Image 1 (cartoon, rainbow, N blue to C red):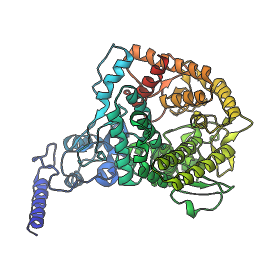
Image 2: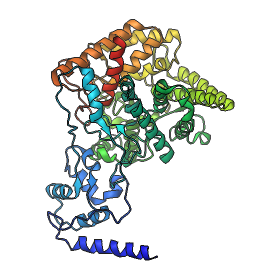
Image 3: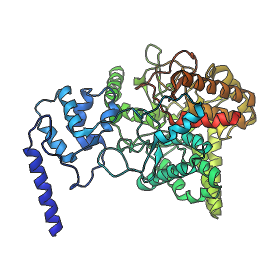
Image 4: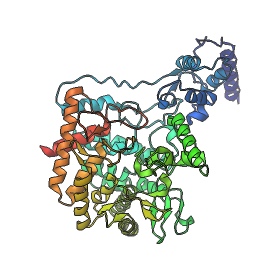
Length: 542
């Protein structure tokens, strides 16, 4: 009781002291958030009016900047202090933020390095590595072990990025870092029931492509297959997240991430539990929603926000995969309808998760569970071949369950069935022919053949999709094409590195004299998954 009274008096004293300070440029006292329980909330809840004013008045060029700030004082008192400000112009807000928060920068202190590209990447692991987190107020979800961030504006761990990063870590003998990262993701599954998009509170409504099973396999490659059994509980819990609501839907209907196809088969889609603007892209989402409802009055802004968020869960934010064409016959982000799409890559990944759970259960001596998930995998495989294979096009495509038809869009998501060895030999040969015809460019393979202005479309190529495509082709002995893609991609990486000493998030694979572009932010330097894929692919050439 005495401790509780002392706490309340201390807290009251701090409030009075803080409010007695001059409402001006400099706080009179440095009041740290030591006597208050740390608040880890989404930024709109954490900062209130300060969040909304900062984002709508474009205080920072990048909407992600403010949601990543670190409070230097008690957050409750910062909110009170801000609410007492008379001047809330963008200039005044910027000054207020500068006084009360540590504002993140994109500078990761990369050093210009003329050494070999592989040595440069080995040095970058230390630059991109973050220690285990202390529990401080702000939007960062603390992780118990060190981890690798992608770089640039991406200052936290990202889910699907991390698998491709691990490929390079394995090649460079960083087994301990891989173990730490897998354990961090297991921690997130146990703490939240799933792996968020990244370890930020504003990502808690969604996940990303489920590569956790593949990460466990990377660790098993380093430590032995028995390690898979160790993560069986987390693999099952992630599966439960994706399959939540399975018993509640009728044929042709959807619930959260579950879609029950017209034939009764169970497949999945991307989703987000929230239908508000993404805090890290707040003003961009508001503008997109305004355009969308202006064009289609039957739409609600909430529907647009949900589809934008689901597109972010896909990792392909954004792409023609999720868009319709507008009245001018052009792809426009305001036509986004992600939640109507049953994606071929997501369902291939979940097939792999089912296969991995079956094997982990077998290693754990749980024969019934192993059989159960083997049967689930086989059922999903049949459904993928039924709904995603386009016989006329000779390619795997996404499926629009609202229209009950394939989208007829070419994308490298259609190579995932080869990566996970779902395709027949004939299908693989036809996919390989289409990859060479439609996707092969001077710098590797292009994400889609469509020029939309979105970053997951032409002319951009991305490291993870080069890896998926190359490995998928090699699985079916399409080695000549796989080797050509590998050679072109590595040469592009080396050429850009020799000119800039940078490893980029994405590359223009069509015109090698130009940089990549499109999307909501500039191309980032770093870069985790590019480094990982380069190390792995270049080692295979030696």
